[in-house]
Amino acid sequence: MAASTSLATEVSGLTKHYGEVLAVDDISFQVSQGELFGFLGPNGAGKTTTINMLTGLARPDAGTIRISGIDCTRNPKAAQHLVGTVPDESNLYPELTGFENLCFCAALYGMRKNERQTRARELLDTFGLTDAADRKFAGYSKGMKRKLTFAAGIIHKPPILFLDEPTTGIDVASARQVRQIIAELHRHGTTIFLTTHYIEEAERLCERIAFIVNGRIVRTDRTADLLKPVKGKNVLLLSISDAGANLSKEMASAFPEYQFQSTASGQVRVESSEPVNVGTLIRFLEERGIQVTEARRHLPSLEDIFVQVTGIEAGLMMKEKEKAGGGGNQ
Amino acid sequence: MKRWIAFSNIFTKDMRAYYLKPPNVSWGIIFPLAWTGMFFIRSGMGLESVLELLPGVVTISILFGTTSLLSVTLTFERRNRSFERLLLAPISLELLMLAKTSGAILFGIVNAFVPIAIAAFLADMSGISWSLVVPAIVLIGIVSTFLGLFISVSASEVFEAQTFSNFFRFPMIFLCGLFFPILSLPIFVRWLSYILPVTYGVDILHGAVNGEHIMSFTLDFLILGAFCIVLFAVSLRNIKRRWIV
Image (cartoon, rainbow over all chains, first blue to last red; front, side, top):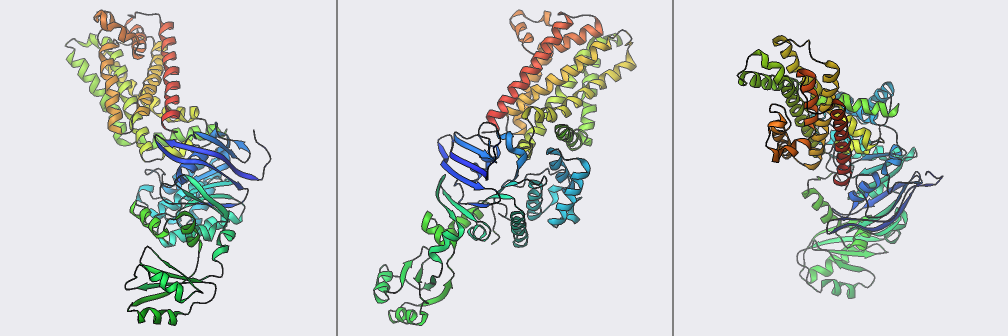
């Protein structure tokens, strides 16, 4: 039964096993009406499984799901008219043209012929696909397929939108366009649940973010609040020829005003609330026979928080995704 | 109205994308033609055998037409994940699967009329009871399609679905009275005939075409209808259990 609520999505204790594997482990979160909520995590963290349960493509083992106040746990069909979904794969019909695909998807929501044709043309124009409207989906490029799949997800103007890795594997220009459309939809009041492994994308678009690792939500907060600890911080990344085991300790005692950390990629990360004096540091290292090949100022971002909270290197997470065929577009 | 729009568009899309594609149209004609030729010629009897063989040839055309195409279309859509689009639509699973199977049912019915059209040139068909033949063909079309649906839900690859289909289809040719009367079968396999839905459709057709049937038409129709309901319900349950995991 529908209830008047300001919550677009309410999830409590959601759990899902696939055989022995615990894919989603007792997660709970809420998404307010009109909010852009990000679900950030590495491959296999449980993002797609969560979306599948929210949209009715998977059955939860435990927990409850409410969409706009409607209990969808046992009857996922109850709120499907309110929801649009862009899956992680471009899954439209290869034998239909772009225009036919959009009209067909509109018909699934009961839209009348004139209405669906007008809407299809409008979306083809929005996504820059008008020239490809009469070409078969099978002949589209990866970026075009992704954009048309996105258009199909919003054909019926859903108030709630689930986006599963919408920019993964597409070219920079297409990814940029998709992000602009997400921002535009959000401005017009659409509630958006976005899963991504692109930290920069989540930081740029989302109002609130949940970090999910190994099926568990390890932190949920407003993006601005997540960024607070790194706001105003100065970070310098030094690429050096040979970092001895005790180098960070040695540097820390010489420069107590800075924090030092050796990274997995062999760099030294220097952090301070005051501007870092690069010259002094380089001289210090060179006096000890260590060559500095690069000194780069790093703008602290959500990536730093993500690494801190999850212990996962963001770079590794993206490489892993690319290896799995996701490509890259950052 | 919204449901009807969704239903009719799924049906129309499938007809255009699969059933009305030139290879399938030609297959839908050539296949029944081949069955017809094969049985009419191989029977060694004269033209008088045409009506005797017609119920079997009609049934075999429907059975192979519906099960083959439905299993291909469903497994194909499952593999490329476009079937998820349908599962995400705000229509009930019952309506969705009726829309997905209606194209195959129609294809099977059209297939049935290929041997009938040929027979019309070769034999006197004035004695045929069409009021029994037409509903029997429709019901055989439905039951074969739902059998194809049941098979498709159990398979994940097209070849798997085809192999599994043959597991049902070929024994049916021998066990359901298509060309050999059930009563002439060895007694220890006869029970198998009665648990296969096609038996009842063939019995109606034999009765309507040649006046020879072993059960009452009412019973045949009731059992065929019951098979349709059971196969559809079991398939839906399996879809919920296997495809929405």
